[in-house]
Length: 220
Ligand code: E4P
Image (cartoon, rainbow, N blue to C red; front, side, top):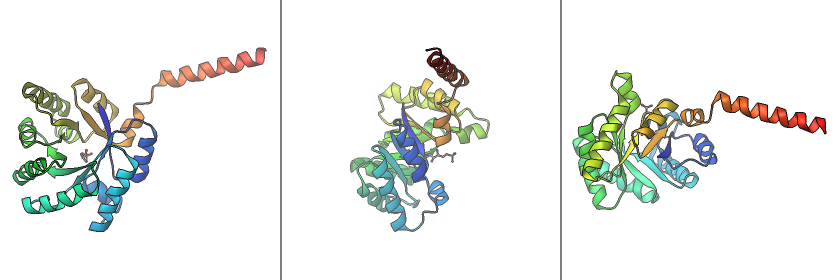
């Protein structure tokens, strides 16, 4: 399973990249706003900065909601770097835009997916990635991981090559559960990736190894 980081923070992207386990980045308009990135020029420059750090796909989301606007915006984003995947919302015009981008060889990420039917539509339009938001589903008492499992089954039934990108991940167990049910990618906050490193027995075990080593040095 690939690990993407879900942030527009260059510091966090650098930190995750330095771990050696980062395969890509997803952003969205809220994450860009959180970093104070505004104005077309700054937005485009920020995506270029991200692409310079990570050698993997970087999802850049369109703001337009109509087909013509999404196509114009997406083509501009895609022209920035070969690793850009144009992120498009799951709407009727969004699916038409994905079909258009697919025909032009432009990578896409269909976002705001909350049902298997929506995932099926995105794949039929040729989306590179589909992003089911599992945390937001859990928030409304619906099993987000179960949706990943359902989409995996459907795509496998028909040999659809759209990658299942589990999004809206909140904690390390989400990552593990997504890996168990066969998600292709998990896009995670840095905190969830870092939490995977931690186990008290690792900490205790390392302390004991080092203490024993120190004792042995004194005996000599
Ligand atoms: C996906 O690409 C989205 O950016 C993201 O995962 C949304 O997560 P949230 O529900 O934590 O906002």
